Length: 214
Image 1 (cartoon, rainbow, N blue to C red):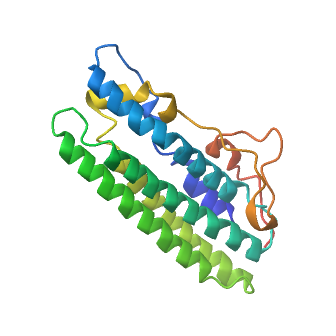
Image 2 (cartoon, rainbow, N blue to C red):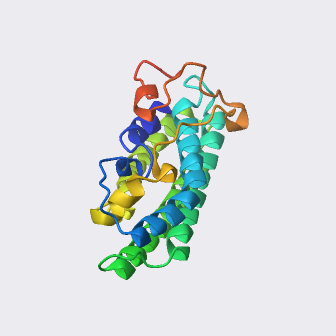
């Protein structure tokens, strides 16, 4: 059942991964300093997001609906919290020293906070599912997966403007905004964690071959 959520996440990867693109050395020191401030704060939040996404993807494919529900509920809340913290990092850094910097900052903060609310709504949707009725639970997960696809696009769009031009180039250089590898921490609610040797990439681990019990 949970592979529907895994498939929805596999295309989204982790927020800011697009920043690890090309760069040049022509950035202003102030732009680089702003990027470092944001990315230093972003790193633990990106890790939290990656771990939460991995929990959804690796939640025991043959797990009980109640375990899947608990794991996904916590993961959605963790991602919401991370998005709010990312919004605060952008807000606290001040307007980036580029053209239309204040608008770029305001838009990113607003969209990240909106995405956090959307994830919390998904959490409520998961919490409302009936784990005692497997068919209804599976149908409900399909609705959650559909909603997740839309939110993942919101997530990527939230910082799209920051990823363009000299600001995006400066952020791409920062280690804090680079790709993170999900931790090997145990999944919540007793669900299975990623097995040793499991690929870190969500798309790689969201294999259709992991068939859940019906």
